Image (tube, rainbow, N blue to C red; front, side, top):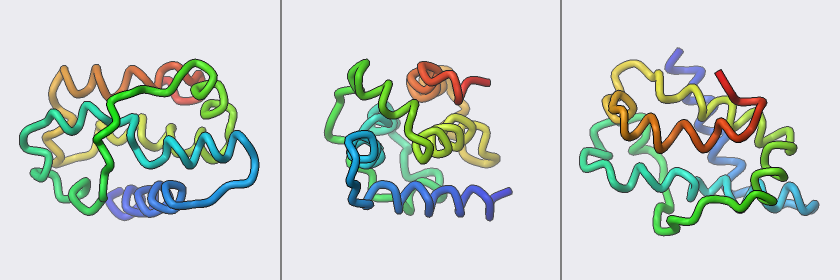
Length: 119
């Protein structure tokens, strides 16, 4: 399970740095820098979870994607897969960051805007 999540994490990292040609791929690479995960920067013990401390999150931007950007993200195959994985990361065993109601609400609900990543 952890190996699979690390594979997904590597995939997310590749998306974050990938250069893209099409508009939808550009939108995906723009938001795959994980700025959409801004609630994490408010979690005091962010480094408590080793799984997440491997990543270089850019959490300075507190702006969520616009409706148009969500539409692009939801319809980009790579983003659907990535969001599907991110949507389920809150169940990672041994990671206390996603055990709180506030973080689950702030982290998970935005992804529910994509029908492909609902429970």
